[in-house]
Length: 99
Image 1 (spheres, one colour):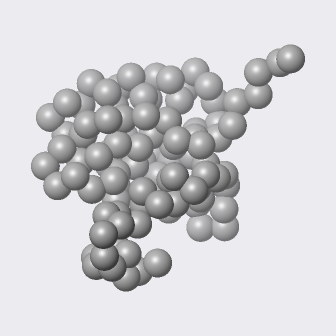
Image 2: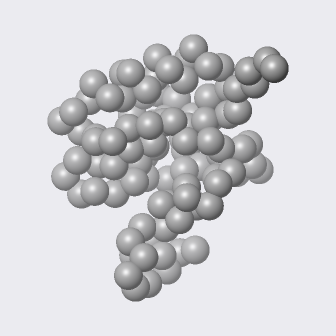
């Protein structure tokens, strides 16, 4: 069966604050998923992940997260990423009040 690449974003946690961050098309980090670059090429995704993992003074735990293209940019295709983007789950505060 042939391999089918699904769109992804590079995501991690900001080293100092712990916030979920996403890689942008200019290789900077954003806390807003709509500003993340949606990667549709396997080789490009792997390269950007390697570059993100090397930024040990900025982010930790970088990985590729499955996404889908939405009207306002990338959207989570799995509940884990939808959950992560809202922040801590212990009580509603900060980002959780926006969703």
